[in-house]
Image (cartoon, rainbow, N blue to C red; front, side):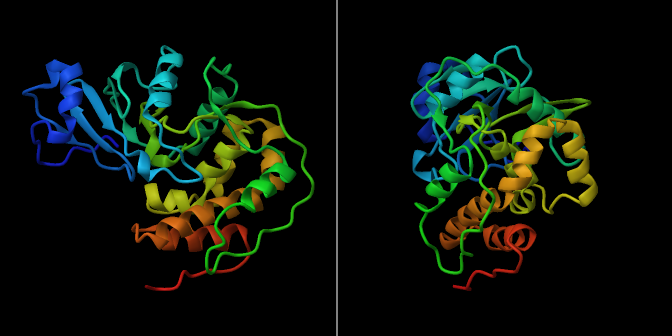
Amino acid sequence: MNVLPASAPVAPPEAAHICAVLPALVGQKWHPLEGGRVNRVWRVGALVVKQHRPAAASPLFPNDATIEYAMLEALRGTGLAPTPVAGGADWLAYRFAVGQTWQSGAAGVGALLARLHATPAPQLSLRRTASGSVALLAELRQWPRLRNLPPLPEVAVTEPAPARLLHGDPVAGNILVRGGNALLIDWQCPALGDPVDDVALFLSPGMQHLYRGYPLSTAEVAAFREGYADAGVLARYDRLAPLLHWRIAAHCALQAGQDHPGYALAFDLECQAFLGKRHDLPSR
C-alpha cells in the first residue's frame, strides 16, 4: 500500500474531522496510496492517514478503526506494526514506514508470522475465532449458501488449539519489506485464535492472486513452512486446510457477487487448489 500515484490533491472534504485533530495536516499534499481494497489511505508528509469504511466489513474480515489503533499502540516498539500517532472513530494516523509491498521471500513471512504468534496477546477486547474442526464447521454452516459454492469438505476431528494473537489479514498487500526486515500493516481485524487462520490467508492462492498477481509456487510454500517452523501449527493447518480454504473461497464468492474485480478468479484458484475441482462463478 506504499505506491504513490502522480496526483497529490489537498485534504479531501471527508477528512475535515481528521484535520481538526491533526491541524498539521492542513495545507499538505494528500497522496492516495494504492493497494487497499476496502479503506481509503493517504500519505501526508511523514504520516499515513487511513479512513475506514465500516460497511465494507465481511464475515472473514472485520473493519474496526478503534481496534486497529489500539493494536498499533499495544505493538509499539515490537517491529511488528507501524508507530501510531492519533486515531478516531473511523480513522487513524501512523508513521509512514519505508518499504515495498511483499513480493518474494516467503521464508521471511513465515518467520514474521511465527514471531507474531509467539507475542503475548495485549489486554484488549479482541474477537475470538473458531478453533478446532467442530467449531470451525459450525461457523461455516452459518455462512450464506452461495450459488456454485462447493459443499463443505469433510476433515478429521481436530481439537481446539490454545488461542494466540492473530493479525487476521496477513495477505501480501499488508506486509511491508525493507532489506531483511518486514512488518504488518492494516490491523483492522486482529483476533485471538488458532494461528492456522493466518497461515491459510497467506498461503491462499486467491489472496495471493488479488494482492501479488499470482499464487505461491510449490517452492515458496515450502520456504514459508521452513521459516514458520512450528511443526504443531503446520500439522494442524494441513488437517484443517480444506475448511480454512473453503472459507476463503466463500469470501471470494461473496465479493465477486458484488462485482469486485479479481475475486471470481480468486474463487476459482482457491477451489482448484484445495477443493479438488474448478468452480467458475456464473457470469453476470
